[in-house]
View 1 (tube, protein in one colour):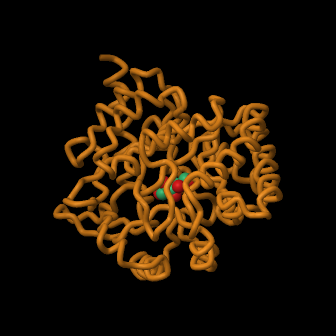
View 2 (spheres, rainbow, N blue to C red):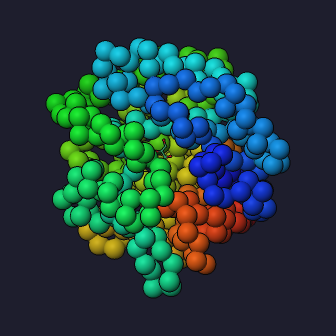
View 3 (cartoon, rainbow, N blue to C red):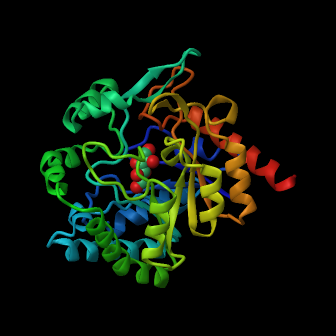
Length: 353
Ligand code: DNO
C-alpha cells in the first residue's frame, strides 16, 4: 500500500505540505489544479509548479484527483470530441511529471452530496451528514446556498461556482438520457482515453457515485457490483480501473465492501478508505475511521484488499472537524491524519498476521 493524503494545491488548501510530510507513513499527496475548469487543458507551468512544490516538501505527486470530465462527454453532446482531446492532452502533460493514477468520476453534473456539513456528534466533533429525505426534497441550488452558509463560504469540493452556474440547464439536459446511452457515452470516453493511458502508463480510476443511488433525478453508473462489472467490461484494459471509495459504496448496506474489494482488486488502482455510521433509513453520518466508530468493517476491507494482492495508492478520506479545527468540509488535517495512522496500522496488522 502506498499511503497518500489529499492536498488541493497552492492557494486552495490551508493544510501546509510540511505538516502532511509529518504524518507517519504518508509519502505522497493526491492533488489537482483546482482552477482549471473541466474541458480545458492543464497548463504545463502549473503542473510543473505543483510538482516542484510537492517534491520540495519531500513528498511525491503520483496521483491526481480529479481530472474532471466535461458534461458534453458524459452527455454524448456534439462538443465532446474537442473536450476529449483536451482531456488526453492533459494526460500527456501529467505523464512526464510522474503521474501514475488519475481519479475521475462520471457523476452527472454534481459530485457528492450531503445535507449537513457540520453535524455535531456527542463527543463535540463535527461531521458531514446525509439525510435522505432532506436531499430528496431540495434542489442543487438550495443545497449550494446551504453549503455556503454552513461552510462560512469555504469552497466545497465538487460544488464549485462554475458548475453551479449552469446546474439547472445541465440537469435538464440529462432528462431522457437512458442508462444504455449513458453507458455508451462512458464507452466512448474509455475508447478515446484508455489507449493513451496505456501508452503513458497512467492508470485511470473511476470514482463511485456518492451517494450510490439517484439524486435530483440523475442517472447512476458506478454504484453497485453489477454496474461496476458492466463498466469495467466496457473496456477490459487494466488501465480502465476503479477508485474503491468505501464510504460512497458503503452508504448502501446492500454493497458488501470487503467483497467488492476482493472481487475488483486487480482493477482497483486507488482506494479512499473511510467509515460511516448508518442512522436509519438511508441516513448516515461520516464517522471517525476505525471500525469501532462506524458501520463498515475497515479491518475486513483492508484485509480483503491485501489478500487479493492490492498494492496501490490509498488515502484516508473525509475527516471530522476535531480539536477546534476549521477548514474545508471533510478535509481538515487532524482527523484525516488520525485516519492515515489507523490505516497504516491496519495495513501492518494484516500484512504481518
Ligand atoms: C469528495 C471526493 C470527490 C472525488 C471525486 C473524484 O470528497 O471524494 O469529490 O474527489 O468524485 O472524481
